[in-house]
Image (tube, rainbow, N blue to C red; front, side, top):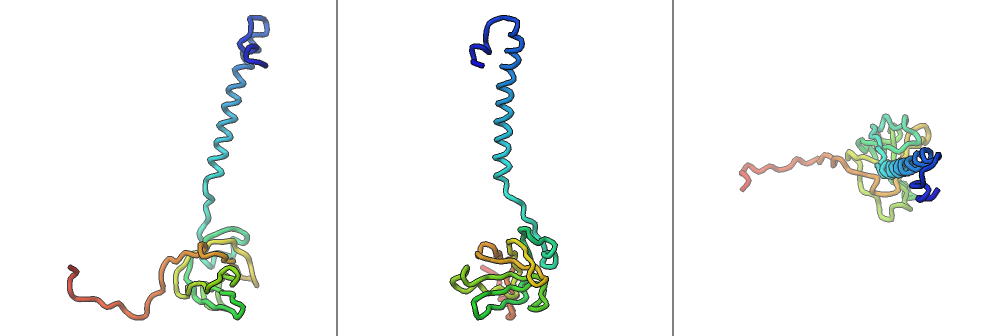
Length: 158
């Protein structure tokens, strides 16, 4: 229906035409608002839950952040590095696997450090595991406690 017809002449159908012409802009406005809301929702970052190593198994197939202390770190002859949480292998409750192909230089030493790793949980030999392919997936929360105490000066700071 053209704009001329919407503004059209006075006749018996004018009430219908006016009603139809008023509904078109409203319908168009609602469609635009709906599309805008989809864009806003699509841009919201997904909230990734943080779990403990012991809770990781209940999140199989989901992306999570696992926060805990690396109790053991071992690199195989093939260059695969394992980070074990909860205890050293084989008594660990959760592990991360860092493959040599993803890390041309050796991964950092993380044993004894509190870290947060992000990725998808999978089960391997009955235990939860996560593949790490980038250092961006690892965040060090707390450095390992040093074995030598810090020397403290008795003089006040100047």
